[in-house]
Amino acid sequence: MRARTAAAATALLLALAGCAILPLGAPVPSVQNIGKARAAGIAPVALGTFRLAPGVDPAIDQRIVIRSNTVHAPTGSSFAQYLRETLATDLQAAGLLAPAASTVISGELLDSRIDVPTGTAPAWGTVAARFTVTRAGVRSTSASSPPAPNGRRPSWAWRPSRWP
Image (cartoon, rainbow, N blue to C red; front, side):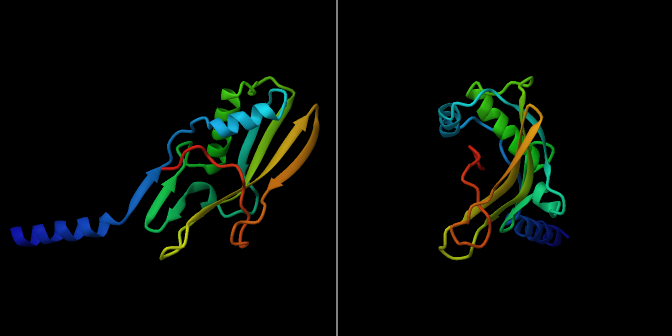
């Protein structure tokens, strides 16, 4: 009986050893992003709604799978909300976040993934979002999706300040 229990426990541990569910850390201000925001010479802004873009697979907003690991955002398991919180953290640290500002930035998450090829090829991540800036009731929209290094998917130049 002991031998079967030990064998079952060992098999379970081996099966679970390669899998993990990881939350991202809370957003931390990035010195680079703070410097860029201050250098832009913009007035303080407010943040509006950040959500998953219509028609995009809901899994994009909920998790990222890296081989056998699953990464979740710490903010309500939503990468759109994590994007908002990360932007808020950097803007706050730069002194450029003002909830009552007349300029409001909103966003829609278009893509969020990390590709980890087998072998020695480098891994790369993709975050694509559509931002809408509303100034005194006038909206302008911009998608952040320049070509990725391999040309297959959109990639965004802004980087979250901390990955696990």
